[in-house]
Image (cartoon, rainbow, N blue to C red; front, side, top):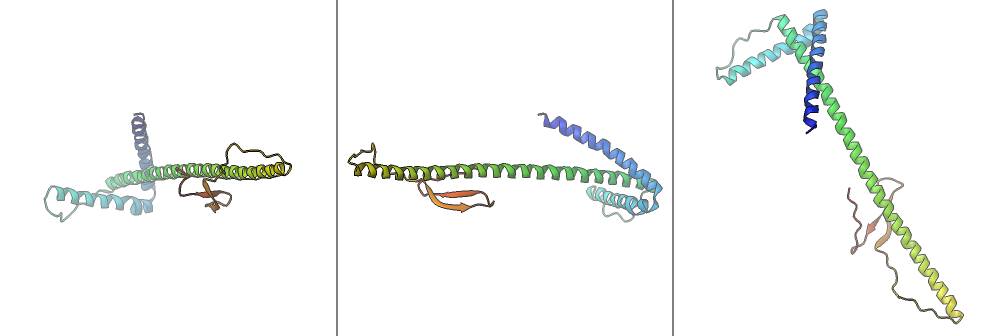
Length: 192
């Protein structure tokens, strides 16, 4: 619910800013003949022609034959208002594009952090598996040494440790990150 009042306040601020921009453009159009004749009056006259044609078409009165152009003062006012709205539209559009790109960068950064965490966990599991295998080999050597001394030790269980992950290491997009591929019976899932 709080988003709607913020949106309304933002639109009100844009309206107020457009009035100031339009008045600035009107002043420039009055002072500068090139700006007035090339940037202010032509868009206003074009808008007047399009508006008249559209009204005639919607009222089914036929195609207009002679459209009266706006006076110079009315064209300057309309052109300045249009340019002011257009400038603010560009500014607001740039703000929206900037916000969307910022959110996309944030999402990409979060996704990469999740991927790095998953890869780190996978590599930690691989390191633990290697440690377990080394410890099993060490225990086997100790058993052999004790057996050669005449002392036989029975192991509580004879299961051999089997890795749930494949040994080949697969490089990912970045150079310093490594991931392992899961086996058929056990899959490591990374939700991004």
